[in-house]
Length: 139
Ligand SMILES: [Zn+2]
Image 1 (cartoon, helix red, strand yellow):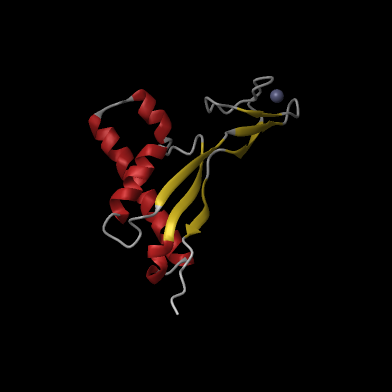
Image 2 (cartoon, rainbow, N blue to C red):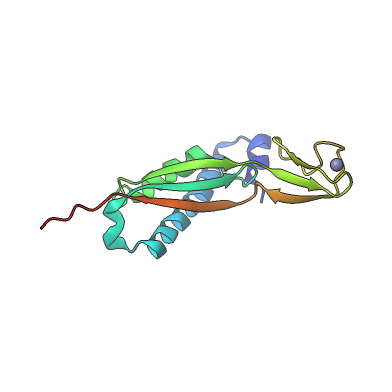
C-alpha cells in the first residue's frame, strides 16, 4: 500500500488514524532494532537514533517521531531522540541512460519521461546510527 498516495487522495479522520498505526508499527520495529544492537540494560545511554527514510516510503517523519516518543516514554529509552533524514527518490532510465531525482515520486525518467526505469533509492527505511552517551567510570 502506498500510504503517501492515499493521504493525498482521501484526507479523512479514519485514514489518518490508520497512518498513525502504520508509523506506530515502524517505530516498534525501530525499538526492536535498537534492542538487537543494544540490549535493554544499556538503553539509558542511548541519546539519539538516526534513521533515513525514502521520500516515497510512505512514512511521515513527524508521525514517526511522535510514535517513537509515545512508545519509549515509559521505558529507559525515554531520552533517545529520533532523528530523520530523507533519502531522495532516484531512478535510472534505461532509455536515455541518465539518473534523475524525482521529487513528486512518479515512476518515470525526469529527463525523457520514459517509464522504462530502475528505482535506485527512495522506498526504504534504514536505522543508520545509534548514538550513545559516554559512560563515566566511577572508581
Ligand atoms: Zn530517460
